[in-house]
Image 1 (spheres, rainbow, N blue to C red):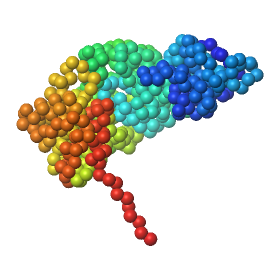
Image 2 (image 1 turned 120 degrees about the horizontal axis):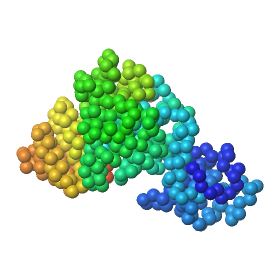
Image 3 (image 1 turned 135 degrees about the vertical axis):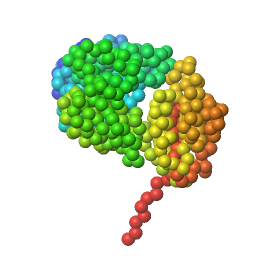
Length: 464
């Protein structure tokens, strides 16, 4: 990690139990990294970190204010705190994570893509976990701070499965250099963050940094069903493993079917016999995510049959397809974690085939799509009309554009300014047998509509 130590050198031996970038959640013994983020500067919380038990802090070289908890002079005999001054605490955090990752010998699977990263991460961890001990990145800790924290939180697991996220070119390269993956998975290229990149090709180039930055002995896992992913594969000269439902791929899915309890399909690897796969996830898009996880497991030499058994317990994550009981006996599909045109179309395709008295779409804004955002929302509204949904509710400025496009073609629609108004429009109108899909970008807060319409949980009465 480097840096200039200010304080007794002996303090660096045997006192550190972990790392933290948030003084509020810091545990005694954690080394505090003073990160400058978009909202807060960690240097303002060094004193608080010391009060909470941090033995030391990594700070920028320009940090001048000596916290009250740090004596003006630190003789070798003191048991006080120390500072490590570096040019950039964020880079130092990444360097420490890389050092520890290489020292440990743990095998790393790194996953990126516009869609499906988290579900693929869970699938890969479950598949590999059938044979090896595994840690995974927590939540969506997938940026320059979250990835190092995930790597440094490892205990003694044999394999780590991590996500790599991005908001600008160059980020995936930086994260790949920190993670040093043995296996890199690129899932999909889609419109997520289009506003910041300008084109799908630019998004593909940024995501493809994964392949370019991987070490030569790694393996690239390539979604052969996505032409933009395939086009990035040449950037890695080492071993490739392809997956998908297309013919001629290394890890191939077939015979996909939707079931009330989830999805079912068959998978074969490298020309071997087919193995049945089933889990609690829904949708062909999620079958692709599971397939990616199984492909990663084969790279780590997990037998396919064992890997398939490992994913059997997969279930939807919150906001990614969970079912919620609503007022009036209706059922919601909660897809409020995020949305994009491609993701919405994939979910709608499955939604339209589900049995229901009425199928209702509650669609909020899909954000970060750039100058073509309205056109993309109109196209999704037209697609919703093709599916003959019983009602389309548009929420927010762009959600209302979507609903208007469906309305112009004959669909029954409603429009709401915000999630609260959407809930008010539906309250009292839902009935037994209705299936309601809620989907929007996370920042829209569409989950607030769902929570307002959620049926109260009734406890089990008990008598003596």
